[in-house]
Length: 313
Ligand SMILES: [Zn+2]
Ligand SMILES: [Zn+2]
Image 1 (spheres, rainbow, N blue to C red):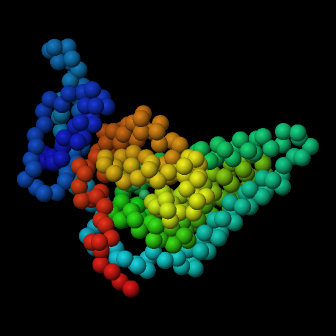
Image 2: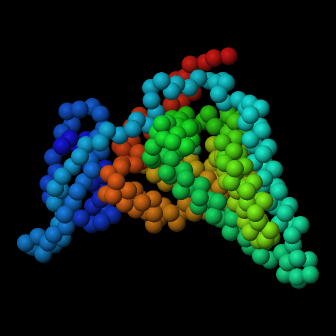
Image 3: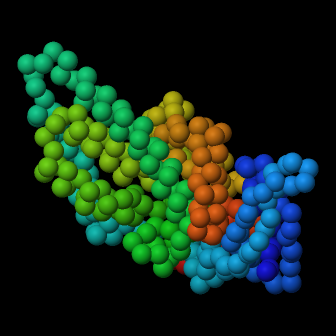
């Protein structure tokens, strides 16, 4: 059994579950990080306290956050929008607008409270989009790698974002949100065709629109106040879209909070209640998978500044 950087996750186990580890060996002879899969047995000690015996541990090599060949250069052409990116953004926006327009067209004008349900449904869509953005961001920040089916490119992009967070402000608009535009197109077009209820269509339109633009809100959260449009700064300061200070905390140690990037309204609750930490422990004990946020603050998470990068023109 080999364990390195063990204190971090032992601290989490004892903090979350108030348990005591009785036996553990540590070997730091290897420079790589290892994750240990625990099989634990609960029993009561002679003093009557609840104790845990570590019966078996299995070494799992974790996935590196960013591989060494993924170097970024300034003015990288990969930050520019292509016509394919723009087409996906256009189709995503169209599907969202169709949902909202169909919601209005299908309103029952004879009803005096005609707008109450669609407006309420839209608000719920806005609130749940923020929660969804947090869950998705937490999952791809912590699990999987570039080779993961379906989500691999998104995982790679978010991992790269932690290494070079400032590049999101250099990334052109359609380049930044086209992946979400494609997901929204595939998801919302069938719903546009299937649904006729104004409230449901309002929910779908607002929720999907917020999810698609969450990457733009995210990019604005990395902007400097003086360079952002005043309307964007006003929305950030009103809490309508995620604020620069709140998202800034996500990019600082311990790198395990403030995952929501629509309005950020769920961040306080999720972080104070340790919701994601509880999910991480469940996944760790059930599947033996260790999230990247449990790693010691190291070069995998730390930011690489522009000054260290090569230039191309
Ligand atoms: Zn992140
Ligand atoms: Zn960010």
